[in-house]
Length: 201
Image 1 (tube, one colour):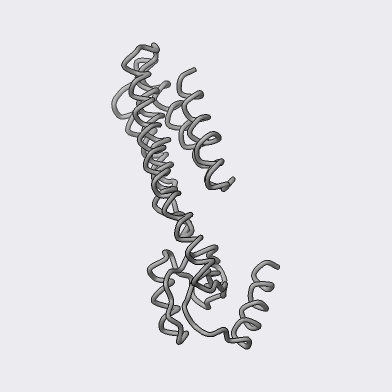
Image 2 (image 1 turned 180 degrees about the vertical axis):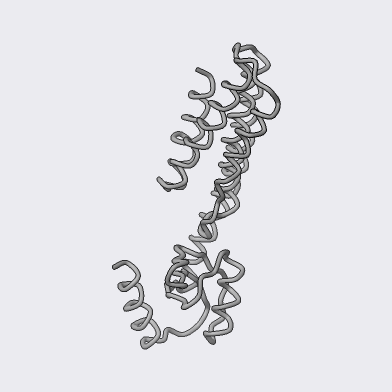
């Protein structure tokens, strides 16, 4: 089946090999299969428009609430949804359908390739010129920009970048990794290390 082949390439050969996040990988598979099954059920039988809207209304209940999902991961989720839509409407495999699948996979591949190269360059530069630290903030931040604002207001460091590693909405705290140009503060590193251990527990 074309949809299964495309989502396997998208999830395993492309996403997991570069990003290694099993939670997002599971979402890629389930979102795609869910959309594909719904569209196949709608188009293979004579159902009313109301039933079709009802099925999509059920799907709309699901919301993406993870604050640790970045833009490229959202791009993968969007691509898997589009694959499910395109393949769900086309029951018979034809050249146009194959070309559409290839275009979608090629677009996300090239976009992620460019971003991956930039991330590798930033990480290599960080290893040479920057210091890295992970801290636990007593507030749940939903994106990297909010994390930067919180870090700059709390620490007297020349912070270059920040990444939200995990978010705990229940206990209202976030684990953030950031790179900075500053002298090492042993007390802060010790405090941050102890907080990291508490979050891992």
